[in-house]
Amino acid sequence: MFNKKHEKMILLDVPSILNEDFIVNAEPMQGFLFTLLSICGTIALSGVIYGYADNPSPSTKICILGQKGSGKTTFLNWLRNGTFTSTYSQTFDERYASFDYNGKKIEGGRDIGGGTDFVKDCYEDMINQNDVCIFLFDAHKFISDEVYRQGTWDRAAFIYSKCPDSNKRHTIGTHFDQTSYDNVNKLREHICDLSKHKCFADMFLKSCTIVDLTKKESFEDCAKRIFGV
Ligand SMILES: Nc1nc2c(ncn2[C@@H]2O[C@H](COP(=O)(O)OP(=O)(O)OP(=O)(O)O)[C@@H](O)[C@H]2O)c(=O)[nH]1
Ligand SMILES: [Mg+2]
Image 1 (cartoon, rainbow, N blue to C red):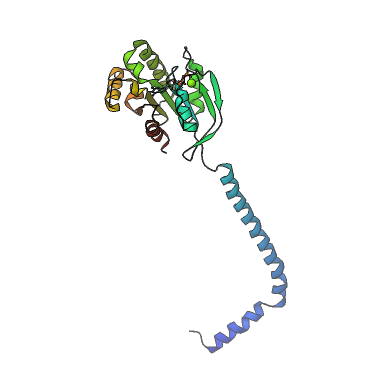
Image 2 (spheres, protein in one colour):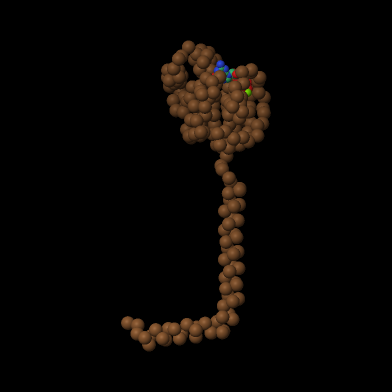
């Protein structure tokens, strides 16, 4: 299609496009485009950096609920310091700072004591203000002491009603080592059987872990179910 004549025309046209006027006008235009692109690039880059710095990795907010002596502080100490607390000292209301568990950021929160009364307002606030609700009970007392069992059920019923999302709540039966069971599944079956007619039975049927908090491996298995690490 293209013959020598066309080729010549094109070659002749290029210098005619790049005439003096165009070159004179192109310099400020290129400068303007360059400045515009630089601004856009800077905005985009700072947006990425800001977004990353603002939210480096999402942290998890937890609340740990349960009766007096159920193992809340023990669980928290394993999580925060990797140590077992053998001595019992009743907690009233203590704050802890944010910390890291196996690379997972746990936001600072409250370690509340089980006390003698079950303070529903406090439980409700804690459930609403946190992403994960961990409910502990002493599994040994649960199977051997009717009054204790009823106290556990009262709290379980309340947590179930305020936190219907089963992915958000975890039930932990502690003191496995103090029971006569040698198998956690058998003890869990017993606990589920005692609770099966309750409308909140799922608190025990689903996501219930039986632990011996005196043992690191037992705590770690339990923490892995909750935090995935
Ligand atoms: N044998 C045994 N002891 C445990 C277990 N879990 C916790 N304990 C002990 O039980 C006692 C009470 O545990 P804490 O963690 O202080 O209980 P808590 O729920 O924080 O109690 P309050 O602060 O009063 O509400 C401590 O002496 C712990 O060492 C367990 O699985 N087995
Ligand atoms: Mg405590």
